[in-house]
Length: 513
Image (cartoon, rainbow, N blue to C red; front, side, top):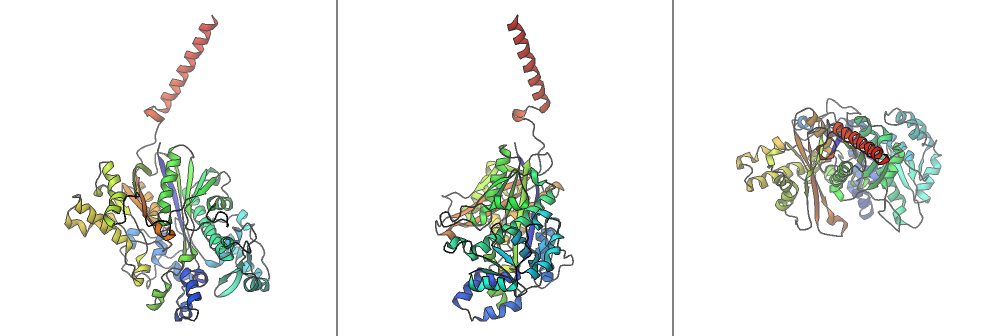
């Protein structure tokens, strides 16, 4: 049995005030150099919601501009306005900060989020108008508390402030007075991840036309981890998100693997469905506050707006083979093993070329490759280069060395088989998976036959190993709805069952005589 991709959702949340108050670069700077010129200048480089919506890569992320068309727009993109700038796209939306703060409270089940009553009254109707937000979610939002109480929570009770347009409008309280894993800072991070995750998963279900009650299992692959002092990363984000999203028949668990986690999780989900364990599995991830404004110092230094002001979220629906949707080919998996090493060539060989070789294919038999799809408009000003282009160049160079491609093709390969990066620098979000929504559509439309998704991760960040990590999988055109195992059709199965029953009845009669 094989599994197919029935739909995907991609959403962003514009969180400019969280850049200032919650991004790791800014919070660290506030500790080591509280009077820095950067912190003083930062508020002058914050984008409005309208500017963020009109940003080309953001429109590509939610499904309004195909990556092939984005590649035709000259860079830099940050000083241009996209003609089509809508809040909603075919994959999801760009949610404004004020609505998201209310959604955070709806996702809080331990009364940790308190919002100013006037703020709630001013924005509650706007959130209710979002097509993915139903009455059960709105019913979870409280009327709010006086502004004085919010201020006291932050100043006297170690709560994490929630801000909008520079004004304190709410707070996230600590969940324990000693346990640092339940501090207000950590609870804020986790509730943000959970709430953005809800946005992503609800848009994916809507785009795929999947009923909430039909989801059997959810796997979360975000970068945050929740737990307490006795099990710091115990989880479970997946089940907590399913609860708020209304997936009443779903169970779930978390998978963590730094930036490679989404690719690992896609393989796990596809395998669970192919094995018959579950019929419908959702792979999902929310955003990461720590990475907001990560390259902010360089952006400010070069007179640019803070481009890392978006939380990213995505979800992919994996289901049983329906004979139509693109399949996940579980016979064509690449993996970075313990013995692979970290040099570019062996890493690329293990992730890209070995699975192709096992299936009698060469590098040019894959129509599109999706690796590190970071938006280079964000990274280039900070000296980060173009990870998407660099990945395709390494693939091409390895192919030439293996004799699968001519040297003259090095210049054309990235454009023909690669793609420009458009995802926000949210770590796990850009690592291959942003292509799945577009790849599914392009395969269904006959534009491409297949696409290899490569996810890579830096395990050494956890200080447990110096190893690199990565896995890859291939999405391909549907080869046809499968019949019963062993090549026996459904009608043949019925005939065999009928014959067996008839023979059994005849034997009973014979024994009776």
